[in-house]
Image 1 (spheres, rainbow, N blue to C red):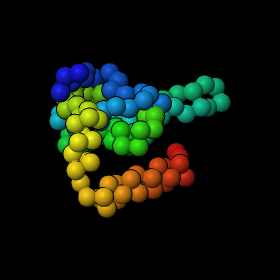
Image 2: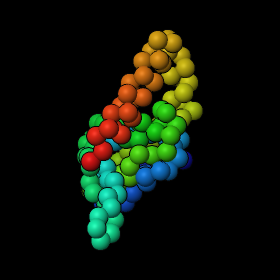
Image 3: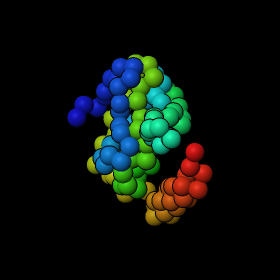
Length: 119
């Protein structure tokens, strides 16, 4: 996998429930975060968030190794830096134990909060 990828408007970066081995840094562009909502007639994709240049994408599933919690696709053309698990893990493992515990604790709390406030 290249260290950088380009997405064009409408292309998916990740899809809901996919396994994760990478996270991304959005260098340029805008991404939409989407979830599928079931209605009376059918299911439809609803935008539940926006990711702007300078933000990380896919960090939750990357860190806790659970499936992706939403789909992400390009709103306009985007350039992303790929951050593979192996590279991140070397840096993360070098941090003090308390720092690693802090990250895991925050992630668990965020997942729990997301479940309680599902839109």
